[in-house]
Length: 389
Image (cartoon, rainbow, N blue to C red):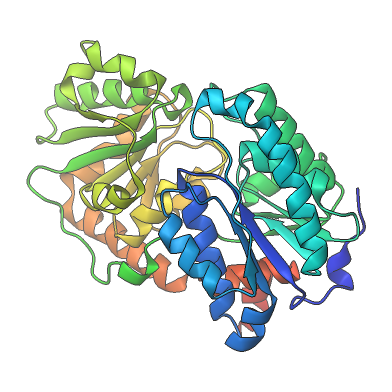
């Protein structure tokens, strides 16, 4: 437990932005956030005090490498590429930890920011960071999702929360969930949409055969079974034709072989980062029938591409969908079907929600504003209120 060093440490102090994950949204979040940091304020000043540590095996490694050339310095760290590699790579983790600690001292780093947890990083970085260096932990999920728990993730999250001098969350729901668990300052930011540079500027129209899409890791808490049951309910009600499209990989792939699963179109594989945008653009409605969640990453892509969403009342999902989505009354298939049906049958409502996504993108804090929040520890909500009038 540490004092709030942000009270004495300048926002423009030498800041190292870190994520050592290879896949998923973490590397993209790192790249967008550091690009936003470099674009904030006086570019030469930020270029002199922004540093980057990233995984050269990341799916978007070329982009991260280019971003690193615009920083004051960068430190690539390889981790592992397989489950077996988690164990076999421990000696390299120890060696890299010693190298990173020396590099922090050499570069005179004042602040380390973990932009998203990852296994090796969350085990090592909180421990190797010197105590006189401010440690900022960006916490996207207050708890580990059911089906994803393992001892390394549990230890990693514990390390992050114990070492943090400050915490940044991306929803009020996560901030509330951390209340009582930490006694360091917590700033609540807003996750800017991915694909901001290609964001839709016009609302969508409801097509003749709308695609209801689910995308990501197919874990039990994602409610794939609920989506399938809700689709059957809608068809039994005589709702106009639609396609249920399920894209991703995970344990719930097993449902593909069930009677309910046969009514969906499945693409069960790991989806490389370069395909993610087109997958989301190919949806007309994004469905989030989660039974448990802190928040959803794909929602920011849906917002950017004006895709209306339907979600369940768990975690930050209602907060995330405000203005461009519908929230079911509970997590039952009947309730999810009730929330979906108006979007499938009312073109005016569909267009209104799509237009709401366009408005949300225009109003949402951008990546430069989020980077400033992380450096300064001031919530975007507070900053926006201060700017009113």
